[in-house]
Image 1 (tube, helix red, strand yellow):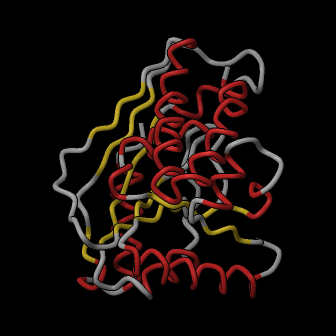
Image 2: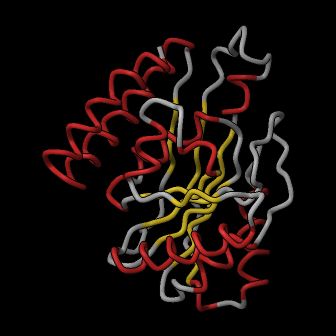
Image 3: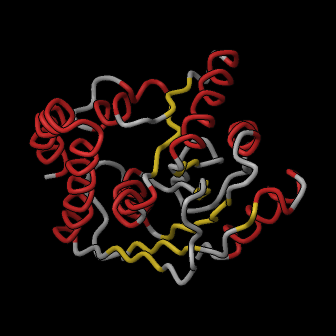
Length: 228
């Protein structure tokens, strides 16, 4: 079902971008991610996004989250769609995957080559300036790769440091994701069923209110404290 939906929405994204530009493409992407999130009902999995925070408007938000699996992403895009979330992703995902690769290439994401530090830094710098100019938000998973058992990994700071450098007037919004790793806890087959996925939004932190080291420590601490 998941991959069938990706094939269905791929030409719709192209049409949205071709005839309606950024807004048309974004509408299709938002709708696709709502549908992908709801497709988890087949597995008896419900997704909840708890956001009791008054998120700032007309500024850059950097959503920082732990990472447990592919199903982290659709609910984030849908829940925070009005903030225009753009992802920092590895360059390999920019080709070969219906819908996903097209969105990453044309939707404003940063595609970084982990084997080429110079390219990664340059791409992140351009990305950071672009989200600042457009007042978009960024989504970054500082663990680098997803946790396959729910246990958080140590946060890497280089990517986040570049985003913060060009968005000092913005905010970091910590997010904690729980249980999405359980969808693939047995591998690709059988899929895990009946484990609700929850995403918790924490208090935004003004970027220029703390030193970078304090900012990272506080962000990592609040995220990991809420992993169940």
